[in-house]
Length: 149
Image 1 (cartoon, rainbow, N blue to C red):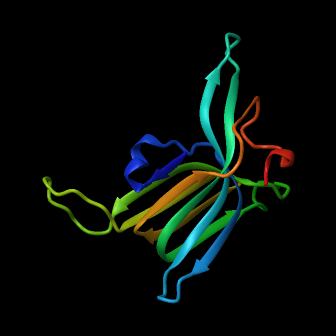
Image 2 (tube, rainbow, N blue to C red):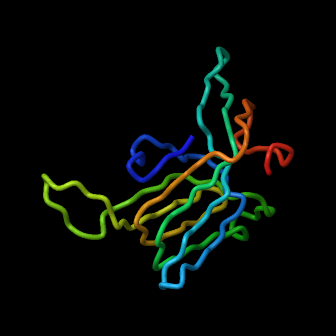
């Protein structure tokens, strides 16, 4: 499965865990921002009101990134080191657009982190996301290391 910037409104990243991020410079002053995530494809509510999750390792890559700012505070909540969890991803156009004009970027992106407290902010032309691991149905949102490549 693959997703792109045009799919933004159909994708939910709440409680998706980020195991790593990498900055790949392109030699033009921008870079690819690559996030190694456990993407939750589906939240399944059981009859007893508990959830199961269909999760797979995925890559979320933002293109032509510029102006990156980020902060993660593991100290304030006395958290041990672990993958951080996304609360939500928001975007806003970097230029004003007319009502009848399609908008394809560039965008100002904000990734709010709900564990521990933090954020990532940057400008980017868009993103691509694709699965790199098998889909696993489980009772937790974060994959065990045995399911990650």
